[in-house]
Length: 373
Ligand code: IPM
Ligand code: MG
Image (cartoon, rainbow, N blue to C red; front, side, top):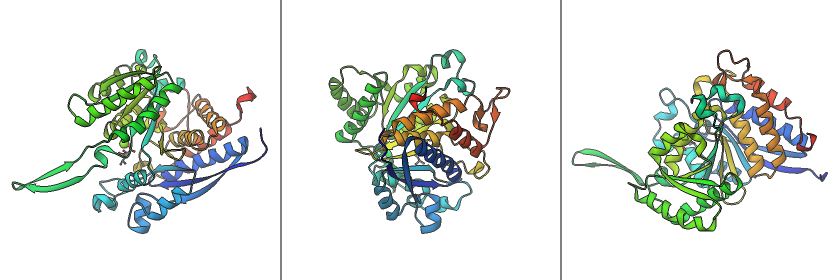
């Protein structure tokens, strides 16, 4: 291996709620991985969501966008507060924390969101599905389109015949569909070569365009077995027989909903990492879960989804595959013995730990390089 030290610039958005404590652990894991594998990381702290509202009155500033663009990748915790109690939700919708997240995805062109669902052997107890279903194994990824569809379409509310009528436009262009479909076919080629397009083509015009574009692309990927599934059926199949899925490709809102379901299928949303990718190698990496303000600052949050997101960052944006593998292996090893509260089952013989200790045991287990075996 070369002795020259590789160095990367990583934007860090701690965010709100449990964000700071889970990001802290992930950054420490990254630093340890850097020491072991010969690279260094320079961190650029950035504001987004509620903490940005507190400082600047808006959830996303131009400064944050420019800082992110100057980085190789961005690692994020989570943003948002409790809508029932937080003053952020008294603001108009475009000034709330979530608008910042949607805004940064758009500004950075993060059109492809990958959310992974893997049932680790040692977490079978935490899986809510029947053992015969879980026993078939669960390992799939959802590719969710992230910068189009309903969440970004025109929105309006007007009064018609004396009552309010609200409209959200769902629109997709061929090129928007094609660029994420390429990522999905490529992902399938690296995995089990099965791709499922999830849509509602029996009802929605936009879904019919997705089918047309994706089925035309299939001839360039003759090895990939492509099938189609309506989203309502997909929601059912995810709990009926999740082992059938390898790569799921879907539009923004369906992916939002199905990826939350998928995270529970493998035990806890506290385990699901995500990568939001732009054209090229840039990406933003965040756990799929939210900011859990109810447990913030209590050392209760599970940092593993953020740590696994950091591993995704090493793999997809920084090309540090060996370090990414090592972090994933360390997570698998710690799960044999340690659990945060969200994963703990009565009498499972494991040790209950908090956020900081979980990060620490991952670092302690980051001992091997591939060729040490
Ligand atoms: C997610 C979240 C966001 C989304 C919200 C916070 C805007 O639910 O990342 O899945 O819907 O994309
Ligand atoms: Mg969501």
